[in-house]
Length: 235
Length: 117
Image 1: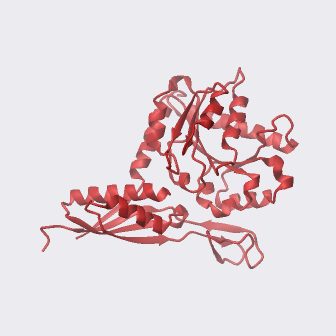
Image 2: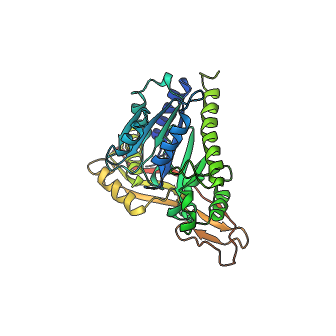
Image 3: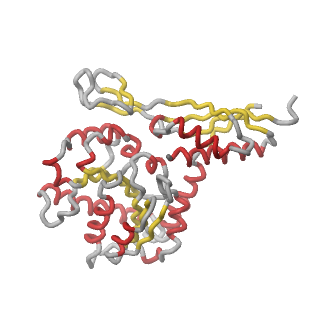
């Protein structure tokens, strides 16, 4: 007996992601899912971003969920900034799942939070296909990785809202054609924003990078503000 | 290895459908997978075989309809596979567009039921 099914394999996972989004939106909290290769600079970008967003009077109250296969090293780095953090260990799993995010969020008082940053497992393939309940997706692409990553991992970049080209200060030492990255991103996802940052040299980055680092921070604030406006807290 | 997650969802849905129809065995599971998902066929089949062991889906045939995804040259229109797309098309153009599918669907099942003639 042949039966037609036509069911999406991620139906259940997507339903859990929607639950995460509803929970966050009840409290007017934005979730930003940060993805990228191992070593692309996701944690360093987070450290720099959290430090830049913390000064009053316009401080954003942030929480970080650190995804990794093993170790709590990244969570320790974030904790040093006095930002509430939870380490999510996938124990070999190559990506985070929405159920894990939901149970981690229960440990925080969401009424006192504006933005949750999730640092996904370092990987340009698997995390791309899994909605975690985020409001925005960011891919960190570092200069030493090479400028061919959008061609090789189109799904990750096609589904991103912003691409952060990190370690931009290494451009003179690497074969990395920024024009190619812009062209490939334009071809696959013309709506994605692109920022160039040098998170480890915040005081004296190349002048252009300083400008786009500000633009990146602005994008984060804007994403949070947009989510709050459209949530129950904003209305 | 997102193939393991995919195989688990596949099995869950197939078993639920089989139970609903009172089936004794699932002989074939048909899938549609878009090239954007970058699913490794061998890993998916292996993961499924391990997970399905001892269930109604043990030794089910996975019949996969692969929907290709590719870059297309904006000048000459030639198609370049994701896996080995050159930086520059053989016609000399770098401009390209993308055509891809991210389908991940269980389309149909062949079930064996006791009350079948």
